[in-house]
Amino acid sequence: MHGEVVSTQRLGSHLVRVVLGGPGLAGFVSTGDADEYVNCFFLPPSAPYSVPFQDDEVRDLPRAQRPFARRITVRSWDEARGQLTLDIAAHGDVGHAGRWALHASPGDRLQLRGPAGGYRPHPEADSYLMVGDESALPAIAACAEAVPAGRPVVAVVEVEDAAGEVPLSSSGVLDVRWVHRASHAGDPDDLLAETVRALPRPPGTVSAFVHGEAAATRAVRRVLLGERIVREELLSCSPYWRRGLDDEQWRAVKADWVRAVAAEVPA
Image (cartoon, rainbow, N blue to C red; front, side, top):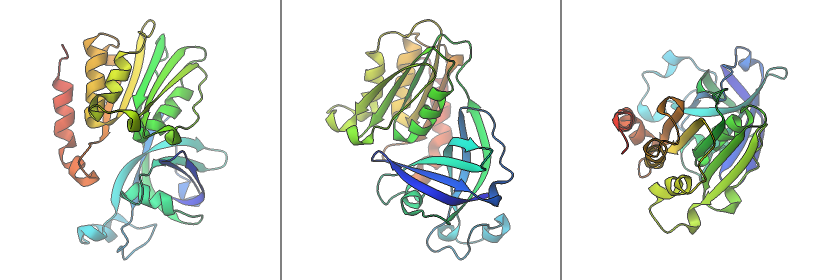
């Protein structure tokens, strides 16, 4: 499928909301998951083709000319209007997805596959905990909106400073804890874990969503499982990126990292 940019909007200092529409999205069918994503294909400047393209057109091109695939969270799908909203993390003019989002304008096209998903807040949990950084903020926002009405949900979100904060809403009783990197002098890998450890213990059975930077999510996982705050089967923990590695370097080692984390038994 492919969508045409209808509008763009800056959200805070590091998110760009892109609304896609057009007949190229006619085959889109939502999974119904709160954490839903599409695989988007971002074209390099040297691409000798345009959207839409066929896989066999680009398969044998030099790497520098082939599209770069990135998973992007579905912020919302408006079936009646046929419009897909993506909130894309952008940290300046770097990264294929963020750079595209910053420069996107109405009429531009983006090719994608999907959607797919795998998480929704457990309907029988007593409370919910959602943890991550800017890369996970769109998924956290969507998941917070999907919790059952009236149940407590705590969102712990790491951003650079107050300019990175965006409004969040929920049908549950929402408590948002913004964590600012700029005012933290310690190890950035431990910032979220330290904040989660200091929280009042959530009531009852907890459903937790922990996504974002690899080392940070691993540290939070150790706290949640080690202190028996969350049962492992009720924990969704996924690394989107790794500090010190670019997208391609992270993709090369991600599978090994995920296996190593899954094998850990926190003390």
